[in-house]
Image (cartoon, rainbow, N blue to C red; front, side):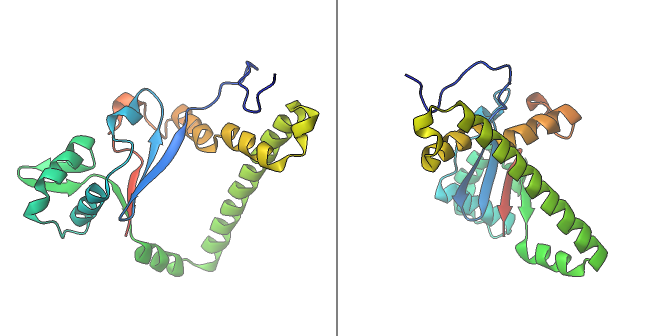
Length: 189
């Protein structure tokens, strides 16, 4: 019997999975599943770890958080200089982002809007291409079942993985042995 999420050899290499996990306090991490890099950080942070990481980002840490900070250091999320820890993740300030957007001239806003619309269009095209291919391969009984088709499509449309593969190919993303385990980790303030 044909399985709705069947895995068949068709000459196309599926991309590596890129998950996105968060643990509260504004922390998220894109987890790149290639060359064992995802195994170098925990699959998630506890609420306490996320809160302590945020306290180091906002420079409000306390001495009682040192044990947790030590764990965050082993994960690569904090750097250590003597007895001091500093963040080793990308930090986004939503207020600063809004301020910078307001400072753009109208031509820049038009250009950025066009780029964002083009990217969204390309993602929609990719999704529909994948959907058409999956639907055409489904038994007649399932072709019009949008719920089941949606699940199959979501499992096959690894957009982040394709982006990562292209970033690796073009050299925007370094191989796993040349990057810090905290790659993809970020926090919103």
